[in-house]
Amino acid sequence: MISLLVDQIKKFYLSHESLLQSLHPGLNLHTLTREIEWFDTLQSSKLNPKEIFDELLSGKPLAFILGHQFFYDSFFKVNDSTLIPRLETELIIERALELIKKNNLKEIADIGCGSGIIGLTLAKNADLNSVMLTDISKGAIELSKENAYLHQYQLPKTVKIDFHLGDRLDGITKQFDFIVSNPPYIKKQADQALVHPQVLSYEPSSALFLEDAEYNQWFKLFFEQVLKHLTPGGYFLMEGHEAHLDELAALMGSLTGFSDINIINDLTGRARFIESRKNG
Image (cartoon, rainbow, N blue to C red; front, side, top):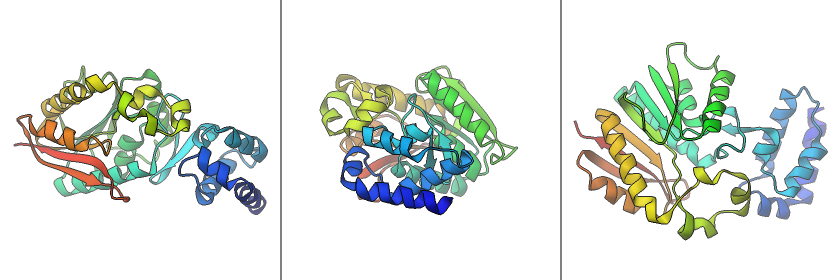
């Protein structure tokens, strides 16, 4: 049955390869086969491949068709309340795990958690005491809770998972050894033309865009909150836009309290992450 499904997927993909690549950024035959095979197993081989193929040709993202997306080492539930997890965000997991293990960081926060992929993946792969997941979107927090439940047997019993509904670190009194974030970082006017039409059509704009005029002030407040909520010597790691990370690093450097500010490239050589440490 699986081999028949694989043959169907391959035939479909090769027959529509150009259109699929234009409609679905980053989609390839390997990914398409992996996701549909997994979902077929989840559905006990009751899925209808033609329905999936038709929706793909309409431009609907595969993750939203299946309701799940593979990220790092697991499948996570997704919906239109949050962004679809990206391959490049897996790099933030790798770097975060290095920092956590090297510096014995125990209390962490995932700010703007979306579907919970970063915080929950770190909770599964590091020796932590607690992980707090925050988001301004109620739908995102609900989805993060669903994913925590879905992965409950992979989460160490010793790690405490908390959820907080709010903007950035508003309303939080706790301090953390490590704060990680994938916030909205696209300038709405300056950068929107560069965003793929599928992303604009299906993913929440509030998780993608900030108004150009408010951009630096939004991040200034965020960085000030990070300083307030990091323990002395604690680390901060954030995904950002390649065109704006230099200015954000300069903004961070203008605040008293950050040191070791570095911009990290992704596998394509593009600036992707900013990392820093609180003095102390």
